[in-house]
Image (cartoon, rainbow, N blue to C red; front, side, top):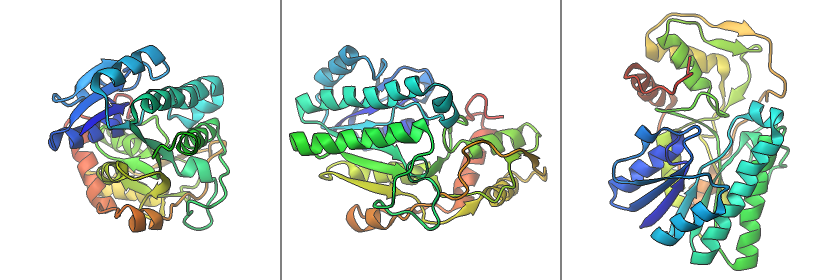
Length: 310
């Protein structure tokens, strides 16, 4: 398969590129390296250093490869940054997505879009299904939801088969600590430096932590699917306190957390119902939290942690 991966030098994108390269696919990465790292790009892939908002550069990359699928992961992913600079968040996450959709439309390329669960659904009393109310609390969530709606509109208008995947809190090796789910990288990074993990609020907030290897399998399962929106998570709630304890266990370091005031806009509960993806994509998560954290800790100890993880 010929595939383009936007954001392929970043956390999730680099793992997608590795999976595609491992099976012999022809892969081109589009990344402006503002957050991604050149060394993350698999040697079998070709890197095009470009911003997804640059229609000319995106068009040239698409025309040269003529991809069958584009895994669109390039994004502004920092919730707090989206509050401080909503215009920039919109430009990258909405305009950038439109640029990709237009390039894909010309060539009949399918787009598999990396969206978000927690930032779109808002507070979840129970695991949220895809038809749950969409109540984003941040410009980041709003821009990701807008991207989904553009994909759906192109599906209706042009008969495309684009797919949106609403991801839980993704973690794993090479995780960016500044994204929506950066807490795992931050906790393990601080532990590696002999510093206590910092918990904002009482630590009873719960999230759906999903390992990056499982997310990659879900993204690949979306390729070839004719449209749809699917949750990608475990369906299990893990509190920040429990996550902190699990990080301490896998690290073998008995360093207790410190507490800080809760941050504005912090969700209390965000868990996804993955049932639709199981039924229609044949996807379900396979990695238990302990195993995923162990793999992440090993990467931190090997020096693969993202700069600033502490």
